[in-house]
Every structure is written in C-alpha cells, then in structure tokens.
Image (cartoon, rainbow, N blue to C red; front, side, top):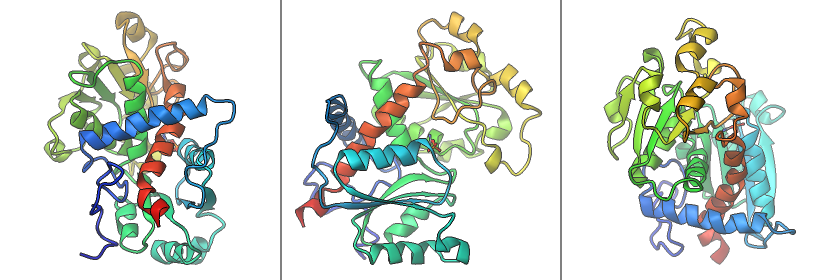
Length: 325
Ligand code: CP
C-alpha cells in the first residue's frame, strides 16, 4: 500500500497505532486513554510558571484553516508553541486559494517548504483523509465539514474525566443539531469506545436518518423530548445550531427551539448534579439560556482550557516518528 495512504504505523513505538488523527471512528479505547493520560501530564506543564517544554523542537507544524475558527486554531497554535514547535498559520482568505489553487496544490506547495505536520480545518468532509494521500506530513483533523472533530471530542472526554471516575456506564445526552455536527459524531465514537451510554436528542429534521450507521461501536438512544434526555443524565452536551450548514430552515424559530430543546434554569434546578457542556461558540438564549452558560455546573471554559493540553498530547504522540528521523 502507498505509505501516504496508510494510517496504520508498522511499529506502535509510542502507543498510538495511527500515523494521523483523522477521526475517532477508528481509534480504540486504549489509544484514547493514552491521549487523555498524556494530556493530564501536559496539563501539569501548563500550570507551571514557565509553560513551555522542548518536546517538539525542530518540528514544523502548519495550521491550515479553510473555515473560521477561534478556539481550535488558537488552541493548536498555543499547544505547538508550548511544545517549542515551529508554527505557521495559513488562512484561506488572503491566500492563493482565492486565485483558484486547490487543496492538494496548496498542501504540496507548503510541504515543499519542509514541514512535518499539518492541522487541517476544511468545509469538506473527508478533506483530511484526502490530504494524507497528497503529502507525507502527519495530518490532524481540526474539523472537516459535518464529519468529525476528534480533538474536540478528546477535550470533551478529558473534561468529563475531571468530574467522573469512569466512563463505564456514564450517561451522556447530546442535544441539538446532531445532523450537521462533527462534534456529535466524534463524541459518539469516543464515548461508546470508552463504555459510556449516549442519548441523542433534537428535532427530527436535525437528527441523521441512518442512526444505526453512525458508528460500529454500539448504539445510541434517540429521543425527541428534552425531559427524557435529561432524566438520569450525568452530562448534557448542547450543540450549536449551525445556521451556516442548513440549506433551509429545519425548525420554525430559534425562540421555539429554545422552548423545546434549550437548557434553562428550570432544568438546572431539577437536575441538581447535571454537568453542562458546549463545544462553542454558544448562541446564548438558543441552545442554552444565558444564565446556564454562566452556571457553576457549566464547564464550557474548562473544555477550552483542556483543549490546549489535549492538542499538546496529540501533537506529541503523533510526532513520534518525525522526532526519531
Ligand atoms: N469548538 C470549536 O471547534 O470552536 P471553533 O470553531 O471556534 O474552533
């Protein structure tokens, strides 16, 4: 097989069997556990007065962002700098993409400048997979269309592990626009691999049709009633309504959506141990009431903090072969 196409390494010298992080669909629990354990160690680094280690000195990482991002882009850049990697940031606007250059040509031109790793966010599902066939660099998916956002799910898992002893039997309800959500897909793969129970909840037009084909790691419970999703839940993960990916209005109004599917203070009062998560950016007053965003049991900013440590762990673990050459 062409080595550029192969996402399995011959020798799992650092514990990860994969060369790239394209999604969590093919990552098993041992690899996810290793990433989370490594992230916990990097969190200690981030709490030191000097938050920098020489681990990736000599490694060059390009952050290739073809879609807007605040959290993921800054988080990856910080993670790379904390690991002493050389970083280059690319955004499609202002680049030769506006002159018609393709993803393949853009990536190959950047690789010709001798880079080791590419972090890619792209509007097209599968773009990171395609990139692995065009370049020799390690590829990390920072969100591809409505497909996967693996580092978001990993930071979500790390945040849950801060509050619960085990994923086994943990009840996680993912609420909202599942259809357009790469965060939901990666979380479903990751949570089921770790032994959690996953419920998805939302209006019918925002749920995928082939739910049984979402993952081969188990099944998810489906409900269209928020009260059912919250009953017995340890974690409620609200998802952003993605107006930019909806070709048409899939529900009557954001006010009506909030009434039926938005987490409100009444829910926080009724479910006294419920942990609330959201990948951001939040539409206040839509997925979550504004008071819920700022509630002490909403861990949205903890998720963002954990993102840097998780991305340090992923960069470090995937850089293994590059460091040895
Ligand atoms: N959660 C997330 O991916 O946010 P950004 O789009 O700001 O990166």
